[in-house]
Length: 151
Image (cartoon, rainbow, N blue to C red; front, side):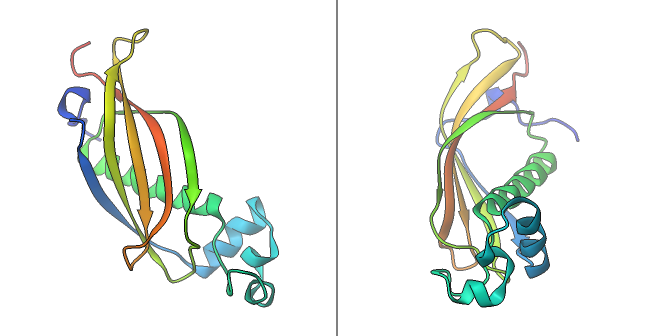
């Protein structure tokens, strides 16, 4: 990966829209069986009797799918990401189902230089994951760490 988008290049208000993740039934069941083994994530009959009405992806799986889209986007554009410092206000707004196609949107709300690490800038970002209908299915606020071009 060639790094091309540094702290200095990112403006407050910047919005990036990206991603294309097709949610597969087998992956929903596999993830749930390992990390969130609740009946509505594992079994069609049980899911049909639940408030979901059919097999639904775990919210944690939705988070993992969003991370896959974000990592690919960062690599594709050369984003000088140094990881994340945490997230807040995680919301699973709508269920995600097999057959859905997810996309993402990130808006930079604020930025500041790290006081203790001159090579790093911090971004306050709002994330929204959407399904193929444009409906928001998950949101969260995160603090991203990004390299400074010239510390």
